[in-house]
Image (cartoon, rainbow over all chains, first blue to last red; front, side, top):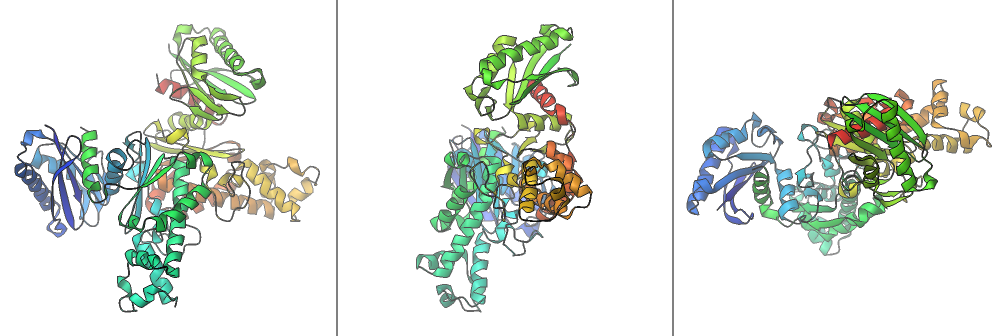
Amino acid sequence: MNYWVGIDLGGTNMVCGLLDDQMNIVAKLKKPTLASQGSDDIIRRLAETVHELLEQNNIHKNDLQGIGMGSPGFINPDLGIGVFSANLGWKDYPVAARLQELTNVPVSIDNDVRMYVYGESIQGAGRGHKHVLGITLGTGIAAAVVSNGQLFYGGGYMAGEIGHIPMDGVTAQCGCGLVGCLETVASATGIARQAREALLDGRTSLLGDWFDSDSLARLTATDVSKAYDEGDELAKEVMEYTGRALGKGLAAAVTLFSPDCIVIGGGAALAGERLFAPMREEIQKNVIAGYWEKLTIVRGELIDDGGVIGSATFAKSRA
Amino acid sequence: MNYWVGIDLGGTNMVCGLLDDQMNIVAKLKKPTLASQGSDDIIRRLAETVHELLEQNNIHKNDLQGIGMGSPGFINPDLGIGVFSANLGWKDYPVAARLQELTNVPVSIDNDVRMYVYGESIQGAGRGHKHVLGITLGTGIAAAVVSNGQLFYGGGYMAGEIGHIPMDGVTAQCGCGLVGCLETVASATGIARQAREALLDGRTSLLGDWFDSDSLARLTATDVSKAYDEGDELAKEVMEYTGRALGKGLAAAVTLFSPDCIVIGGGAALAGERLFAPMREEIQKNVIAGYWEKLTIVRGELIDDGGVIGSATFAKSRA
């Protein structure tokens, strides 16, 4: 029988999944990444974990067909190189080749967002749609496009940075160097920032009762959702504004990529309809009817296992 | 020897070009489209023109390898169907199959903008670049993307409608039903409209000396260029505003598609640096440095023959 390994390698944890040929997860192991111990050491421990997975599940190593891995940062999937990753300390590091040496199976790597979106488009909420635009709403916001089963990369594998489209009227400084980028608003960080700034400006809100100036830094997007559910005006305004900004950015992406389906994943997607209702309104208002009529907008399905399933699916697609 | 035919079919004229295997134009015939005589009649006259081209140039019909055709409207290139074209009267009309019946060679068709951009990317100003974003600035503005030699289509073959991204602060009604679309500003029509509206608002300008209220409807983008060259303030403002709007729209497209090269074609591209200088500034201001540093921005090279060369190149790529 054929098996695949999908790896979701983050700055904190590495999650290795063993999947059957239908991309069902058979087993999973989660370990600390320990990035400070260096790239070669990470690869060695990844290879050990793969062997552990096979042994624990009585899979012969000849049945392992390939390994897929998603990781943060700039990845060259054609060369299998980690071009740059601040979290992992990669700089033109030959990730795929090194892991392949230790495991003797083909290794495919790509950026974690693209792996997640690839998984959703083939095995998750976007399956059945030929043209899928997927976004992850988390600390930041990023996007990827899968068209006829193929990821769209663009020059330098840099396509899809929807979070760094500057939005009119937004004045927050973005980490990328630009001002007013979509992700300064439409992200977990952006939602929390807006609420915090309003409280510091003296706005009254339930959130002001829950957090004093000492604890304000701990206010998260989840707290804004909670205050929203209790009818808090400020929380409503923040979600409304964020949803509209997100909708405006997505409208531009819809007009340029013409997806049949938008899949929304990432932690901040848990804000759900609080965010999606104004977002949908704004998309509809800003795209030609022909785009809107064929568009399905759905929450991601794979959530926690998206990276693992996407990476394994990607590895299988390249086998 | 191998020959190809490229056809640029417009609402007014049909231009048929005979090209050698290196995509050099050997001969060209231009005839009225006479769209009112019906689709079957257009196809019959296209086939006659193809035969005429072969005979006049002593090419044996066995040496003709294929025909490519670009036309306005919604085209399904996979099925070779003219889905809808107001100018040509097409509604799910099997263009490729009909022309193939009469010529006995494979026929490929696609939207005229995609054919033009394909030609520029392979044979024109974008050659040597792997990821090309091409736009045509004319009555409207449209875009297409060629990535690793492949056109990006999106769902319904509708990707790239950059002209229909609503821009903040623009209030003109667009023909598509939306308000403030980029093409209401960044197009030949948009440039002329802005100048006309300013004159009607009482602005003084050389353009006001050249056109009285009776002749104002004849004011074109070319007149605005002329006034600009004579130092006219209004003309400068219009070009500046238009260039910046175009730059802002292109910045979003650059961030999403990550092209290595932008090719700018179409009649309004003749405004040249008057438009491109503020456009470039605005792109640079609105994209992450990594996109800007790898980006080349050039005027289209193929101009008049872009449709013919693009269509023939497309036909060859599918042979």
